[in-house]
Amino acid sequence: MATVSYLDVDRYKLAPLSLPSLRTCRCRPFSSQSLILSRPYSKLSSSGLVFDRSSAALRFSQNGMWAHRRVITAVARSEPDRLGEDNTKKEDLLLESQQKSSQFRKRVIFGLGIGIGVGGVVLAGGWVFTLAFAAVVFAGAREYFELVRSRGISDGMTPPPRYVSRVCSVICALLPVVTMYRGYIDVTLTSAAFVMAIALLLQRGNPRFAQLSSAIFGLFYCGYLPCFWVKLRCGLAVPALNTIGVIWPVPLGGQAHWTVGLVATLISISSIIAADTFAFLGGKAFGRTPLTSVSPKKTWEGTIIGFCGCLVTCVVLSKVFSWPSSLLSAIIFGALNFFGSVFGDLTESMIKRDAGVKDSGSLIPGHGGILDRVDSYVFTGALAYNFVKTFLPLYGV
Image (tube, rainbow, N blue to C red; front, side):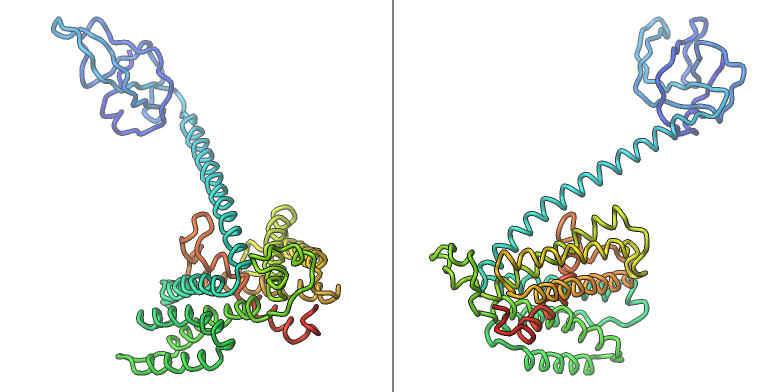
């Protein structure tokens, strides 16, 4: 009979195996120190033991009384058992698959919710759009300064003090409001940068140039550039003559509600979404050549497919909204949206890479932070507004 001590049971933590035929020896009392196997094993080695810590109960007689004891069963094998490792791998793969499925559901649910919400805010325009946009800018600015303070970046530079970061975030949130109220922000932004420089120079300790550069870039990246979306949506109030405006309900603004700013904003946002979607799908299916070391997952194949998808979307929507009237203008508008989205995405990827983080935050389940969702839009608003304002005759109508 082969005996397996409980010390060996406690020593080896292996995977559960099905319970074999196990019995106690009737010729001797059951000991709490050993288990008796039902058949002998000629080559018993401790390296081949697989334990099952299930609560199997054996009934046995001890001192004339029947009792239930919780035992640990063991099976001795003559060669190392790999079944436990295989089961562990299968469990890991199953768990990983479940996590990916859950993550995908979160992305889809929250993505649809964000899309519907953004569509409603863009259609509303005015102060509804501006105030909602200011809230997004504030959250994005907070994430930016948290990235600046992260270990990956702060190891190589001195981040600005926390009170400076908080003041910068508030200023960034106020800039869209000032843009809506006054129509321009040049004086406001310059004044804010000057005050911020004074606050950094007069702080206790040794002021560093890195503090000034990161704070000023934060004002530019998180405050100044996003304001062009307010100027694009609310500043270009020229009516866009299209069939949708004719059937638009009068209580919601009627035909006058469909301005060049609204149509340009809708086309720009839709083309950016198309660029990201086609680039992702194309990269998954055909991606082979890395685009840049800043974002290793991006490929040239996915980028080219995303570019084509962006142009097609822009041209199709230009026919739907009857704006811009020229096909060449629609193609150029789509190209500007694409390049603005790509370099905006790469800029945020560069910041995250230096910070040593995967996502800028965790505000949106399944999507990461605000900057992870709006990075493609940071530069695009400025490019779209200046193209419509400066290069399109009669604003493309």
